[in-house]
Image (cartoon, rainbow, N blue to C red; front, side, top):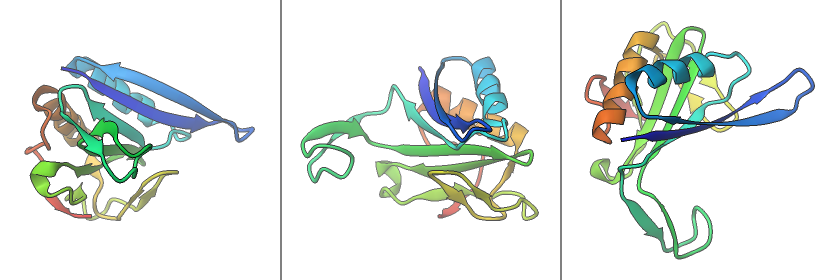
Length: 147
């Protein structure tokens, strides 16, 4: 089982640097969270290698007829909180965010916006990502709400 994480960081000169990491172990999940804790890091898009692919008949994610992943997972670390957005066919492709600490602030990234109150303690984020790594399913160790 593996997860491919893709994210960017911006340097003081406003250059965006792209990053990729393949996560295959629980220890690597912790390393990913540490890297996303960089204040200049964007949210990461996660793709699980053991999830199915589907044909994008309408061309929403590239050329019509191309093969795309069946899920969407974004993760962000801000102010010692971790944020998750998840969508998959098992949940009608509806986007859901984790129910988090009511005191967690809103988090904005270049590609995602996470509402206040959806931030998780980093230990809970780690548990959720480790569960996703092992099961390829939406983590059940957190509660979910419509995004």
